[in-house]
Length: 114
Length: 114
Image 1 (cartoon, each protein chain N blue to C red):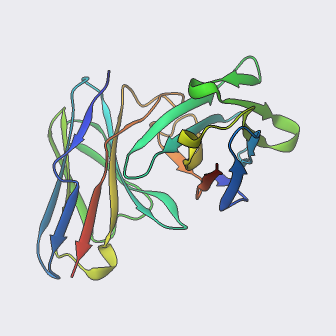
Image 2: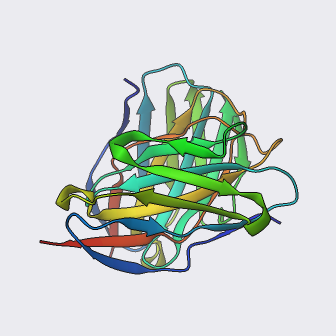
């Protein structure tokens, strides 16, 4: 079974802090994704990566950056957290970048920025 | 541009009743279509997907979906709902050349009455 793990289930940070959200997958998947999920808005793609050190912006990249130094790990960075970044963050991975590929999701990190 | 519409934000059904969740998509070519389920506090899990062939697709947990090109729809059905089906359901569309990115609908929350 594919396993996608996220470093924290719940996180509380203060405005202006630098925040790191970590995601690890154990199935040698090429593609990894970061989404944020907000009530009534569904899932919105922040960034994705299709290879080590390769990244592409999604629909809402502002205020975020990412890092993929190793194939299994994809980090989401909030350079200076703001209250409007309070949200549920979901990481996903897929074996390849083919359109029919299944994405496997982690359990999510619920971030509260005070 | 691709888009996905789930017209129903919240649906309540009685246990044992049948279920249909609606999904309409906008895409110029034949899309890749997915249904995911998110149980409370969890990440998303794939229920089923369509990318070619038989337009009636069987999935896990007794769910099925039918692709209807003429109606741009991919509705999810289950003949008899169980209390454990209470969750949020997301329809998603993928496209060739998209590096595996998915466009998600805003979700339909399903409540099950005893």
